[in-house]
Figure (cartoon, rainbow, N blue to C red):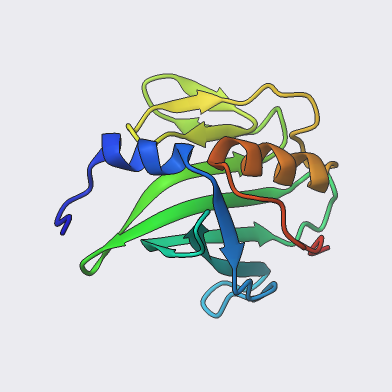
Length: 151
């Protein structure tokens, strides 16, 4: 049994087809006013749950449409720790969203190996919920599922 986070193995899991099941729907996040969150369990193409792998979508309900913050993530729980496998963060193009070795403004993604990449894909922006979801599902190889627009 895997006892530690193996970025190569997780990258391979990310390449495999998956289905999100047991979607919770969006509900207010308990410890942050103005945020909503939804989760699902990830299954492989044989219908078997991927050990510890979950999908989580969290977003801030914006007071202004162009001021979104949407985070779509795949996590893997190993023991008591939850590791980020992949994450897409969407915010306005002009907003500083990642302050690492290189600053990134606007949408970006966190890869299994720790690399952070800007996302310049047309349609991955605050005004296009379906474009965000489609990009995320394609990058994580998760089959489309009924995912309501939260706001």
